[in-house]
Length: 232
Image (cartoon, rainbow, N blue to C red; front, side, top):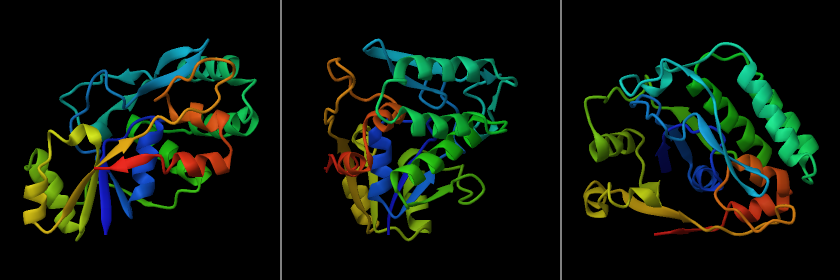
């Protein structure tokens, strides 16, 4: 069994979906502390050829709360603004019609927490991309919040009887291959490759939200992009 464990991000970049696609089970790490100014409630779209940050407003967000406890602000102003930005920026993209329907469906879901929205978005985008990996939540399952860092990840791996754990490349300084090997678990790091694709007439801007990827790539290209990474 190969697993990955990641915090929930809203419409994350292609590397996040490469990670989901590379494993048998993907665990949403939603019972850890919320990170202010992280990627849980914001990401980048392509606007006028440059990255443009969108943010979903939250109610009393705090690093003293767990991710699954953080609520979104009630009301629709952010939704209208977000969808208008999407239309103005991508209406001439080749896949705008069907992708805008998908994103609008997600945005208008009646949900209270940012965790619920990110999970719903991940599931629907995975389905659109043909990713069939099982996705589960860490909250309420493993009951190991007394553990921290690498020890907690290892505990989840052992409870899942995982033989292989894959983490994004950013975790190389956090996790020790020898420590995992001692527990009978292979540890690898996924390094995503920024393979260019056409974005109107602009120079390629990498690492934007998956929304950008979907707007410009058909299913065949998506299948190719999902494999554009190295395991280290």
